[in-house]
Image (cartoon, rainbow, N blue to C red; front, side):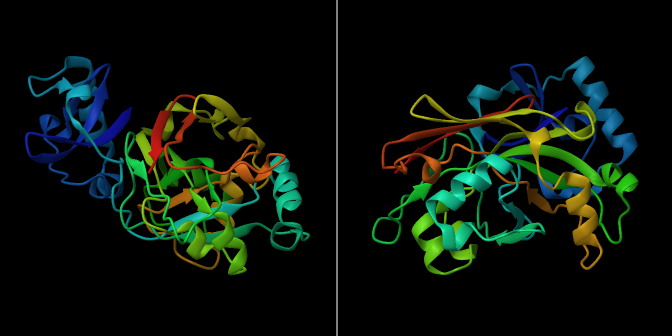
Length: 292
């Protein structure tokens, strides 16, 4: 099941995709006003109602192409939890770009946070922040959305806590990132989190999801890998983090990016105003964003 946030006739709605159409969840008798509310509150009975709605259709269905697009979770409840250097080939290219920042031994997972005031939808623009950013980069990533609070979760329990998956472009200012010796500022500038085009519920995929993940810049294929190649996989990450902190329902985890980012090219090739970036993941969809 694919869930979206969209605008239609002055309303911002949560809906379910049915082919080329979108149906508001209220057509199934659900009163959720935001995707955050739905992710944290959806019951098995309500999910069954949505599945039935997909089978029968609704008079409230409209063409999704005629709506205003929003990121599926426009305003995350908290900072996004991110994984750094979580594909082996990306680790190699990152160390080549900046040995001091990325080349040290990393026997444990690298975690950092990403502030998101408002996520950018498919079709939205990425601000190049002239005067501050000189090395603008893209990172196609699988986003994991939690449906339950996670505390001391065991590996075999992890999948019961996952609501679904989405595509995230972890846009990064490399100069800012390396200058400050940590990644928060360089990852968290306004418009640096394109997300979408939807959330696909976890039951649509295998455990773990092994999905093709790609990024294109101006139509040129740059990243081409598979989410099955994560160094620290989804169960490991959720189990480890939940031993010391509570991961609340609605938490978004960005699982890291594969090789092929701009800093990894020889010579490095960073984004410029006018460039168009597409990030896509098999079974979820793609998001395309222009740099302004």
